[in-house]
Structure formats: C-alpha cells, structure tokens
Image (cartoon, rainbow, N blue to C red; front, side):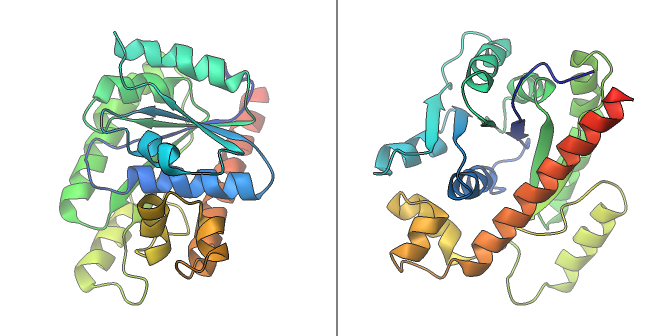
Length: 237
C-alpha cells in the first residue's frame, strides 16, 4: 500500500519544547534546496519559528513556508499536507510540540516521523511517552500501518559527549531506531535563524563554518529518505 501523499512528507515532532525541532526542519529544508529540489514547510506551531525565519529570508527560492498555526481543528492539518504534497517534491511539517493531536494527525499522513531529542533524561522520558502513547494513536489513524521513525539527537557537544549524555544516547539506541548522525550544537545552525539564511548561505557569506553542519544535515536527510524507500518497498510486498 502506498502513502496517501504522492510526494515524501516528513513530520518533525516532539512533545517537549526546546529540543531543536525547528532547527532540524530548517536544516533539512536547506539541504533539500541545496540538492536542487523544492520543499514546502508547513509551520503548525503557534510560535511560528519557521515562518518567522521565512519572513527574514531574502531569497524566497526553493523553500516555501506556510503558516498553518491557526487551525479550527487539529485534524485540519491534513488538508494543508495533502495540498502541499500535491505541489512540492518534499513537504516537512513542523507541528506544535505541546499540541499532541496536531502532531498525531500530521504524522498519520507522513512518510517519516523524525523525533528530535536532547541527550537528557527529561527529553528521553518525553520521547518514551511519544513512542508509547502517541505512536499507538498514529498507527491507528493510519489504519494499522506502521510509520517509519527515528530519534534525532540534537544540541550535542561537537567536541566531547559527557558521561550522562552518553548514557542517555546508548540507552535510547537500545530501545528505538536512532539516526547515525546528530544535529550537534554548531554556530551555523543558530546563524540560520539569527540572520534568516539557509546553511548554504551561512557558508557563502562566511557567517559561520557550515561544512560539518551541512554534512550532518545531509546525512540525516539521506537516512530518512532511505527509511521511506524501505518502508514503501515493504508495503508493496
């Protein structure tokens, strides 16, 4: 069985704020654009961090951000996703962290669910709850079809990981699928939001060193796409 959406849809969602959700969205969108494809970001978070970035961004080429924060019902996010997926090669949904049902409905119509998480016990507990409670609801919304998903560690130290962080990472890897790459705490990611730039533009303008941040974002994107392809192949059997 194929996904309801004709083009890849990725939801980046967590129930905990401050986990690097929108940074992940912008980093992935940046690398999709740099690879020569178009991407639509659906910002369904009341904070509108992605949409505010888009307002500052001058190029307005290859990335479109839609304000979908003001929904009458959380289920209405599905209409935005279907419309965007019919027009753009890639769609990334940035749902509100504390609006669980909105995230569930977004994930139910997605080909991949990326769960950003800091290497802390609080974030690990929030993710465990997502995989227990929200996952059950999402699979039910999808008619019993599982959704490809991975945990993405964010804001990790680029030089050395503390003992506590390493413990959280290892414990998480033993319980759930985790991306091989991490979205580490580099200035280039912060510069995207601060100056309204893509990662490629951050590098071009010399605002920050973006070589490694771009490589990590590209690796994460590649692994997500491979997971989507594997899931589609499995469903065709």
